[in-house]
Structures are given as C-alpha cells and as structure tokens.
Image 1: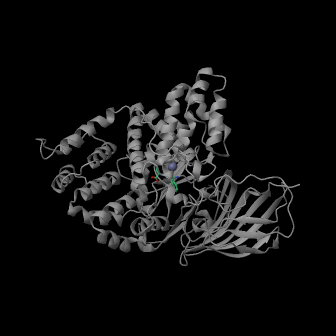
Image 2 (image 1 turned 30 degrees about the vertical axis):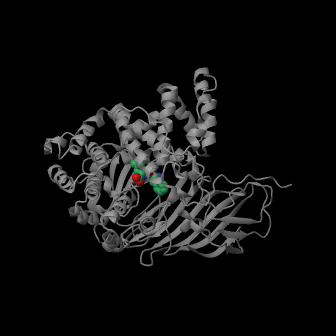
Image 3 (image 1 turned 90 degrees about the horizontal axis):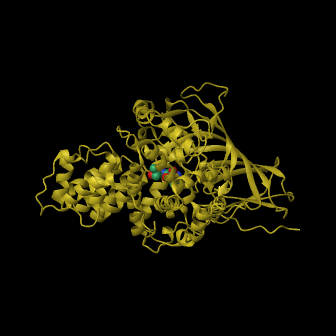
Length: 616
Ligand code: BES
Ligand code: ZN
C-alpha cells in the first residue's frame, strides 16, 4: 500500500525529496580555468523514504551539461523537464525497477558546468590582485548549487560530502582537508585536493574556490587565506578577534562542531559581505578596512556555524531562522566582548536598515513578512534585511518577554534539539512552548503572544527600546548639519575625531533621512571630515549616497570609480539605484563598463534594478 506523502516543505525545489533523501555526495571535478568550466561527476547516495516504490528520481538542475547517468552501476534513462523560471530544468531519471523503503542506491551523474552557470565566477589574470594566476569561486546560496551539478537543492535535505578536486592552483572547499592527500601541490602543476565534510550539510553550503591562495594563522584553529600579496594585512585585521569570538559563542551555545574555523578573503567581486561556508567562511575584501571595524561580519559568519549550518531553516520561507538567529547571536558576541550598549548600537543600525527595507517594498508587501510565501518566487528576489532584522527583533522581543536569564537557557536547548536537522517556524514555536511548559509564568506569556502577527503581519514590528547612548552623540551632530545653513554651526574635523567608523555610518544615515543636504554642504562635509577617501568602505559608500542625493555632481565620478572596484551587492545595488536617479546615462555606461567584473548573481540583480522587473 502506498504511503501518503505530504507535499515537501520547500516550494523552491523541483526535486522529489519527499521520496528520496540524499545521504552522501561525492563531487569529483577538475577545474579548467581556460574553458571556465568544471568537468567531472557527482555520486549521490539516495535513500528511498517511501514504500510507494517510486520509479523516478527528480533532481534540481540548471544550465548544466549532463552526460551519462548510472544508477547502481548501470546506465539509466533520463530527461530534462521544461525550464521553470529560476528553478531551472529538473532532471528526471527513470529506474528500471522500483526501490523499496530504506534501500540506498548510487546515482552517478557525469556533468560539466556551462557559461550560464550562476554559481561560479571565473576571473582572468587581469581581474586578480597580483595578476599572475586566474581565479574561480562559487556562491551557491540560495538556489545556485543546481547550476554546478544536479542535486536536491533544498535546505531541507542534508548530507555528508567528499570533494575530490583537481586543479593547477590551490583549492579551498567547505570540508576539512584530507591531510594525507598524496601529492604536495606545486603551482601550475595539476594536483588532487581532497576534502571531507562529516557533518551533514545542505547543498547551498557546497563551496569551492581555487586560485593563487596563501594562508596565515589568525588563531589556534583558524587561518586566513587570500592572495599572497594581501596576506599580511588580512592577518592583522582578523587575528585579534577570531578566537575570542569563537570562545565567546561557545559559552553561549556549545563547542564549535566543524574542526577549523577559517576565513577566505575573496577578490572584490565577491557579491556578499560574507558567506558562511563550513570550515571556510568566504568574505569580501571590503572588510579589510585597516581599522578592525568590520569584524562584526566575521562574528556573523562564525555564528552561522550553529544557526544555519547545524540548525538549518527548512526552506527559504523560514530564512529568518538562519539569519535572524545569526544576527541575534552576532550581537550577543559583541555584547559579551564590548558591553551591552554595543549590542544596542548595532541593533539601532539594524532597525534603520529594516525600516529602509519596509519603505522600499511597501508596508503591505509579502516580502516584509517574517515568514513570507515564496511559491513561484526566486529567493534571491525576496532577499532583504527583513529576515535579518525582523528576525532579530522577534528574538530580542522574546528575550525581553521571558527575561534574559530564562532565554539564555533556551538557546543551547534549541541548538541541541535541532542539531544536524532542518527546522521551520512552527517547530521553533513548539520547541519554545515545550521548553517553558513547566514554568507557569513563562508559559502564559508565550500563550498570549500574537504568534500569527509576528509570523505573517507585513510591515514593521513594534519598535524595541534600545540604549541609545552610543547613537545620541551622532544624532546631535547630524541635527547640527541639518540646521545649516540657517544655524551658526561651524563644522570642524574634531567633530568626528572620537567617533568609531560605525558611529560615522550612523551619522551619515541620519544625514540621509528626510531633506537632503545642499550640494555645497555635502561637499563641505566630505572635505572637512575626509569622508570620500575613507578606507572604510561603509563610510565611503554612505558619503557617496549623501553627495548623490544632495546633487553634488563631483561625487559622480568617485561613485562610478567605486562601482568598478567592489562587487558587493550591499553597496553596488543601492549606488546604482541612486546614481540612475541623478544621471541614468552614467549609471548605464558604468554598468556596461564593469558588468564583466561583477559576479553573475550581482550582474543579474543590477540588470533587474536598472532595466526592469519592479520588485527586485
Ligand atoms: N548567508 C548570508 C549571505 C547570503 C544570504 C547569500 C542569502 C546568499 C543568499 C551571510 O551570512 C550574510 O548574511 N552576509 C551579510 C553579512 C552580515 C554581517 C549581515 C552580507 O553579506 O552583508
Ligand atoms: Zn548571515
């Protein structure tokens, strides 16, 4: 008798993962820099989880070239289903005979990536730091793994991995190196690099990078890897904080589970601030600001080693369980090291970003819900600050509701309960309710909580009370600037000399609110405070926004210049949006000039922003 199988929880996969679960994947690839291709095969061990005796396996795939497919050692028939928007062309593999419940079969797929692959960026010599060797790296989150190899591309399935990667240049992957690998790598000579990931991971955490990469220690269990000419400055930036962040969060939850915690600093076209690939966080070089002021990105990616990588949101609809928890933990690390008011200061920055996102989408927009419906949507389109900051606000609210001490006890309980699993918002809720079941007072508070409003009401949640002590000074300074030219305020460089870079960021955000400055005042601010030339890109970026919005034509060139030096979407997308309002032709020309520099994901998003699709 056939079992009834519930529809899968993840609407953004075409795979029939309610029939099969992948338990282990072996990825064998050779990296061909000249052809900009990976060529090889993947072997998935699939376990049947139904006694419906399904005779087909459906995997996600997009823009890959598939060769022979073998099931249990024999060639199998397969076809690609018609393309379905961002979800790609599902791969349907026919089985000769039904497979019984719990039986495991090996599916071996020969595959090559194509030039349409959205997960990989290939850099030519000219595009790299020391211009000597080519470079390649992957970015699979959210649903780009399927453009490297056919797989169950859903965060609801996790498996262990083996990586066997042949390359003429050093390779990094999201597993621990197999140390007794046969050959010592020689630059320019093809070598086999092997890695193993023994903790089950979802497909979006599959990661590869290869190029002229060297490593230096930044802690007892950590190295930073980057281009040899940048190694020292990267080491300096990270060595003071990495281990103390790890120790701090281990006290909040439980010991780090992945062996080593390393950071790869990528070329500037890396489209995100950071990506929590297990064993090796991938990070933008824009965090190397020579002031150690952007290391909160490292605290964030490290925190994902628990929230996201061990306990994974079951679908992109429950993404707040990855990012909201991670922001919450990142700020707990900051609080433990620098004091509570730093946590609130960071939360103030986050609240501002949340209000910007909600304004941008509109207060009724689906994507402003904590748990949005993403059926038919591209998760990259739904990506915004909302799951991060609404998620944080929700957890911060729960902490205040229950009291810090009680909530602190729940944290390790939650991460133990779902360790190695995927989780949705309903399981989060029931785990919290169960944990406090015997505590009458806490139970009552949780019963009375308007869960539906938190999960499904669009727009802003209630604003928490924050300690504003670190923000007040900069609010005052911003007020003074806004009072010009009527007031007698005389700006001086000493106004900002005691401020941290993040305080300057908050200052500039305040200046950006409501009425823009005049072009003259904006220029004056840039000169007196030396903002345009700041090494801290967060500061430089916001100052350009101030200048553009003030109509100061002299910032157009530096803006275009910055857009050719950094491919991090957090800066690139808003800068193009503002630039096109000031001078659309310059925006278009700049994009034409630099589009090959950007990662395919970034290129695609900016194309949407500049040339169409209003939601993006
Ligand atoms: N996992 C995200 C990056 C991501 C999200 C990539 C969704 C693709 C799809 C990562 O942990 C992240 O949140 N990075 C932030 C940095 C952080 C300090 C908020 C970023 O890239 O800005
Ligand atoms: Zn994150």
